Image (cartoon, rainbow, N blue to C red):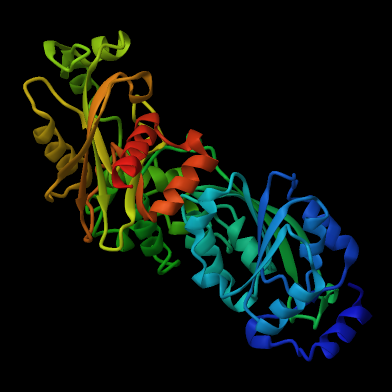
Length: 445
């Protein structure tokens, strides 16, 4: 819309821009088209738009043939958008984006996020929609210029801080352009900027304990003028030895360390690596026949290298509301790294029975011991990596203690979302889990 049209429309629908909601309406048509072009939209994309306002970006996105979910907090504007657009590709959701359940987006094949985020709540929205791992493949956001400078900053600059590192750990950030206040009605007091954020290749950087990384970074930047030796004393009491091993300046402050150096520091405190490759080579599994009778035992390399029939267990852990806990496999795994899998799973070892293996895997991977029930037994096939699988279920509502050599991340998901996710993105799951989930649903129906 032109500037005059925006003013007339707002008067017609009885809306005065609410400063507390950060309502500033974009009136530059050329800029609107340019912004949407930066998202490289295709008809296969599902676009989530935060704060559509009067629908400037919404209209430009719909013209690309995409489906759009527009989340609008102001009921008056949501009503206006429903009356203005009669496009079957558009869904208007009157809601607070901070309360939106992002997990539902896993059921869409390709998700991109657009938004002119309100300044007063931009940090909270960023942290919510950038929470790792995410179903979103691209974020194209209009933010306060100072915020974008913080997100895209490099070491040894005044804008470089905890937020910078928290975002750049998992994402690449591009400062696209500055947007003057004059293209908005009403004009904000500061300029804006457009930023494009995309996921990093998970193998770009070394793996680390993400929770510990964020804790160290927050501590390090809690008092920027202080040296890290004082701020991180609790985690690195022998600071001189640590900095010598890592090649760091012992008098360094937080802003002087690059992202790879912060990762190295985290791994110095809590190393993460492959799960004892020598021990894995020496593991012995029972080799079985087509009726799951034990024939002999063989080493892990021999069993996997020759696709010999063997045994495994998968455990599905649910919480009190029935959501399923899924684990994202570590990049260190020799099979199906970085794919989503059952709550816990593993091989039955030589001399071990299925039930015993299930209890052991649950303790090793999740750090818990809860009663388990047998659900169903799956036959060995290529989809199960030639494993006979007993599937178990259990319940747990407290914290887990994840084995970071096995699991990169874990989270609870409603059953309907899990099924929709598998249908939309089957390549994101370990094949054995997909077979187990099918068997579980069939047994549960």
